[in-house]
Structure formats: structure tokens, C-alpha cells
Image (cartoon, rainbow, N blue to C red; front, top):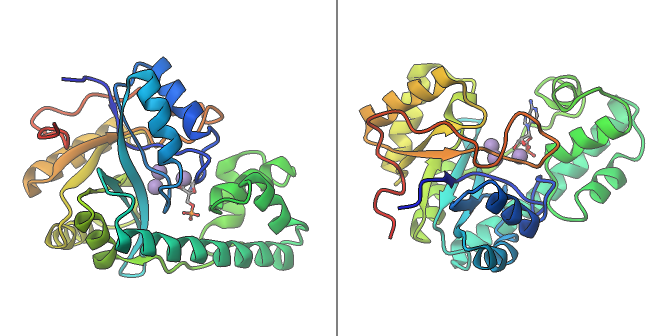
Amino acid sequence: MPTSYDLHCHSTASDGTLSPKALIQHAANQNVEVIALTDHDTVAGLDEARVEAQQQGIRLINGLELSVSWNNQTLHIVALGIDPQYPALRDGLNALQRYRQQRGEEIAARLEKRANIPGVLAGVTELAKGKLLSRTHFARFLLEQGHVKGMQEAFTRYLKRGKPGYVSSKWADFEEGLKWITDSGGQAVVAHPARYSMTATKRRKMLGEFIECGGVGLEVVSGSHSKGESHTMANLAKQLGLLASVGSDYHGPENRWVELGRLAPLPDGCTPIWHDWE
Ligand code: AMP
Ligand code: MN
Ligand code: MN
Ligand code: MN
């Protein structure tokens, strides 16, 4: 049985800064034994990652982090073990990628008009290397151009709700997105559940619907969770019969707070999402 799992991370196929190949090499250096590459709304990095994972003797899980809307709120669903060729999933991801491009153009137009920042679209397109646009690319652009001193500030001053570059987003329908994942053979996991601004009551309501729609997992240990948050989520997973997942949400070496594979163990009593993996 492998002991080191990291089931949530990003490459340059979305908003990470390491290529899929470099990410897998880094995972090998960190002694990660099982890794899921979970780029936002794309599976484009998986082929390159798979080749390198074979080289390094690491197990790669085909993954993805799907953006969905639930009651006008954005949620992220980590999908594990999907079939990346599954037609409904592929079509859904294509639509999301087109939407991300339009939304990126809208964010750029707003920053140019409302915050008087020139050259945004060209700048972020360059940073994203023409691939999928995420707000992370906008934050990096604002940082590089000296408009902010850190990534966090880029979000709080420019990109969050109520700020000049904010565009309210309409992602995949919750139920439909979960169906793409489960029908393609994947396990759906609610990513970083402590990061959503919702009451505990609302979170339970959301998780009830998630389970009704075929969702099976909760990301109990996340690079973005405190120890206390992990324990809260572990208890919730146990109460609701959800499997527990772990993921750093690594985006590259620039972020000093999260390291690939360096995760706290699952709290006692959780059933790991990998308990019945072959
Ligand atoms: P998007 O899906 O395009 O809205 O971008 C969301 C991504 O932005 C997340 O996956 C994170 O990588 C990043 N992000 C969101 N909020 C923050 C924040 N406060 N600080 C740093 N990165 C953030
Ligand atoms: Mn991201
Ligand atoms: Mn996320
Ligand atoms: Mn993520």
C-alpha cells in the first residue's frame, strides 16, 4: 500500500507554474507515491504527466478540478479517476474553457476601464501561454506590473466580489457537472470545503445534494485548511458517510506555504478515498 498521496495539484495546463512533466518530477523528489493532477476545467496536462509518471514509477490518477455553480455560489469539485475521453465530460470541459476565455476578456476589459490598467489581456494571455485563463493569471500580471505587492492583495484589491475586475461567474451546473464525473467513472470530491463562505447549515445542505447527485468524497486535508478545519471536515465526512481525500492544492514553487505531498495525515476514523482502489 502506498503511503504518500497528493490528490489535488495544478500544472501549466491551468494556473500552476510547473509543466505537467516538471510537476511529476517534483512529486518524485518529494516522495509522493500517488498523485492526481487536477487542473481547473481541463484534462490537457494528463498525457504529459502520465508519460513522466511512468518514468518515475509514480502512480498518476486522472483528475480534474471542476468549477461548478451551486445556488449562485462557485464550488470546486475534484474529480478522481475520470475517463478523460468520456464524451459528455469532454464536451462540458470544452464549453467551460470557452467560457473562461470570454470571462477573462471581460475581466481584462473591466480592469482596463475601471482601474486604468493597460495591456491586461495581452499580459495574461502571455502568462497563460495561450492556455486556459484563470484569475491566478490576472493576479500574477498585477503583481509583475507592480500594481500589488502580493497575490493575496491582487485578489482583495482587484479580483474579488465588489472589486474592479470582478465578474460574477456562471460555471457548470452542479448536478450536471457531477454527472459528467460519475458517468465517466470518476469519484467526485468537494475541494477545500472550509474555503467557501457558507454557514455550517448551508454546507450540510450542499453536501446532502452532493451525495444525492453521486458525490462520494470530501477533501478533509487540504493545503488551505488549518488543523482545526481538517478536524471539522473529518467529523462531517464521518457523519455523512463521505470518503476522505487529501490534497495540497499545489500551484508551483512560488507559493511557499504549500509543498507538494507535504500533508498532515488523515484524522482517525476517516475512510480514505483510496480505500478500495486497486
Ligand atoms: P478562477 O477559477 O479563475 O476564478 O480562479 C480561482 C483560482 O484563483 C483559485 O484556484 C486559486 O488558485 C486562486 N485564488 C483564489 N483566491 C485566491 C486568493 N485569495 N489568493 C491567492 N489565490 C487565490
Ligand atoms: Mn488555482
Ligand atoms: Mn479550488
Ligand atoms: Mn485547486
